[in-house]
Image: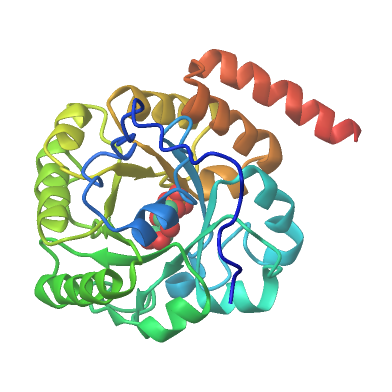
Length: 296
Ligand code: R5P
């Protein structure tokens, strides 16, 4: 038992100082519980309100993707530059050191490989497993307009229910099928449906026209996927434009780990996302870092 409070020091109640009540820094997240907000703060940097998520989960449907053949060799050196790592439990357990202390976004849906109908996914983890792995969020593909649209929406809503029970955010990923249009109209539809049905934040592809309307009509934060590998300057420009249009960050994979210099690229992406550096300046920084990495 603690001793009785016998301090001779006069008690201070600071009755003249009103208790602070600061709104949470992320859009649409103010009424979430403490644990959920704490986990989101391990994904999004509270200073900038943005995130650079490094996506390396591609193997869950396409096997040893170029750049991810040996995650231990190619990806571990990048971890210090990412705010969060998005990956499968298989790679997490086998390769990522448990001393890693930033956010983990765990791939929580799966099933079909690239040899089959991709929208036919199911939930691929149990909530106990997400808790055991101490993850900051669970990610689920949602195939709006796809063959197994309803099934994928139900995967998402079940994960949202589990996540809400234990304070784990859910990232809803708008999964664009091969034949689906990648335009603002589709992204608005998909992002809004996913947000309405309860996810904590949304991942979409960037579209050059009217992306600001996708962000504006989605009540929760949006991050963009990187998509297919493109020249570094183009990828930096895409990230810049998305941030200017209101995105809360990137969840980028191939444009980082398939770059000629992945370390230089992730550092340049950080400049764009967290500091608002313009694409040309970020590209010059990339070139300098690339040549330093070569010499080193
Ligand atoms: C796709 O479904 C994967 O889950 C990736 O996480 C996502 O596409 C982001 O990676 P990338 O920037 O390579 O498109």
